[in-house]
Image 1 (tube, rainbow over the protein chains, first blue to last red):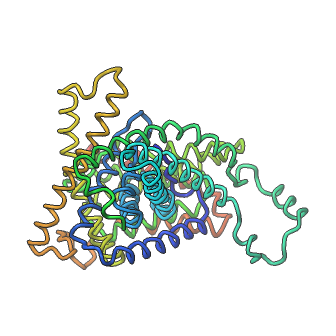
Image 2 (spheres, rainbow over the protein chains, first blue to last red):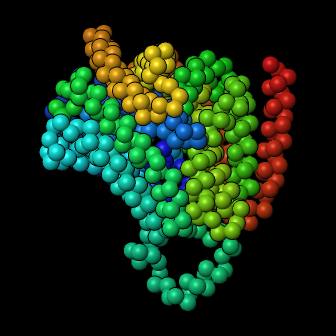
Image 3 (spheres, rainbow over the protein chains, first blue to last red):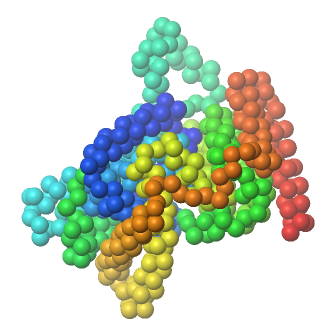
Length: 240
Length: 266
């Protein structure tokens, strides 16, 4: 569990819809980027990387939902565009197992896709700075940093979920004053008061996921090292 | 995630949901998930969850196993419930029930519908690369599951995974994943090549392609519509919420009767 899958029904509809639109746009751009690539080569790679992510997610490392997800491995091997397509496929399939909500596949793809995207560019950067012999360090560090950043995106998504877009864009008739807002809040029964305590949420997931980042970083480093030795053509050659 | 077990259930079940066509079951699933999302009423959500458990019993598959698979998001929902804790158990319960009910709905769909049937329904609305990617991923999962089994056995026999040698274990396990990736890629490339030679053009053949609507499809659809109407009705007309407790009692009675009936029949 190096990241958190958002379940159904916890985020507002407008944010869920925004997630789908954002994912659709990135998917369209990714498909446009790979339009000239031969599908005969890309499809088996997408298939095997996506399947590997699903299989690894099904192996609990520590009991209770702790697993690796290999999103950075996907980013390094497939390149950011194809990796995003692969992650969308993974999120769609695992949502059918109840692993992450089906309505929030868009948002989950954005969060996990960001890991692959950031991981790929950080890996390229570290390789350029430290040289090709540092493949283990480059991939491991890229994994840890991209997981930290994707978790920050998740916290950001949850934070944004508390904002009412109608109030932000001023759709409501007249702008509510502090007095009327206070009055409205007092009228709502306590059990129906919405809102996630962002500090508490961030603290909980940062504690839970910290171990996962390190573990995922180490595993990513060894996997990339192994693949670079056995099939170096799978790394750094595709880059779509 | 027990991918192989789920695939076995989907292909070998004999319930009305197994016989219903994938398209109508996806509509049924969408209606129930919409019902779960639009309501914030604890008793109604509990009623929907119990109704889903009843439907799981009707599939005549191991219910405990299905509920265990569908309980996976509980841990994620718990984090959200704790983070939004305002002293009310009802609110935490609503978050948990929403996640659990949606997951159970999806699991009921996949334990009663083979994956290729689901992919065939969504194929016209997704780009070719995603449609093909879904199918090749599904096939590759089974290639990898077999390879993973061999790999873990091999690692254990050769001392690759031993007690108290954690760094060594992580190193060997990671190299094993690398090996899986390389071997799996070779298998997948060959498989895709063979499929293309045999005339594969992106369409997966499915045994469940009849266009007409059957009795089983209608039953699934009615259940979906019924749950959706109740949820939508209580959302629009708040005064109907006073009946949500009766809906819960009705669900419990249906669950008990269904359990006895299925037990008696089997």
